[in-house]
Length: 237
Image (cartoon, rainbow, N blue to C red; front, top):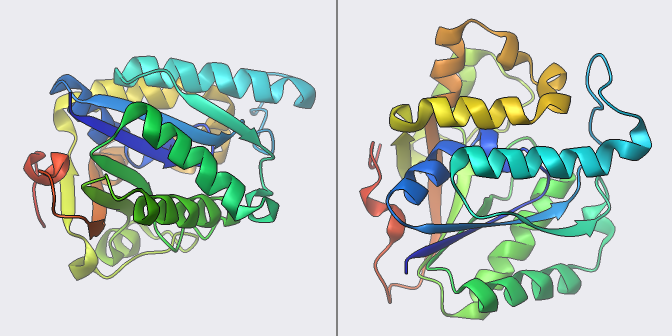
């Protein structure tokens, strides 16, 4: 069976920038697995708070499971490294954990963060670098994709905290309209993080502009097997 493995840093990373693509793949019969490095304990407890700080890791794990169910993907695998401190973890240990999951699920495609981590977040950068190294060492994965935001969208939205890429660097854009309601449901699952995501309070048309298309860079390919993402709706930019 065709399989994709997303390797990300925090609960909610799977939803906001790639959730629609994951849901579309799942609807096509692809087995979509998720490996999340932390439980997100350094994130927000909500506004107003939905839990005490000590309860946040367990609540965010519940939110992550809720989002995976909404997207129709496999239940998440969580490593449990300290949130906000992934860069301090031995990279070899993280690479080994990713490769162990690769051996178990045998993905054709690996999806992760690029060198900019989308926002420059050190956890995003660290997990993306380790996933890229796992791809290089595996030799059994057809393609490595990284999430991206094109400069034109970032400029249009006025988002200075985001790290854009030149529009021409984007190799795949995916229209997630067919699974828009599923993506919205997954975003609502991450209730503790709504207050720290201003776009979730924006008008629907502005939300659709930002969240309704997902952008990726095909960072590497082995060329030995068909690429699962080549025929996604929207196609090359």
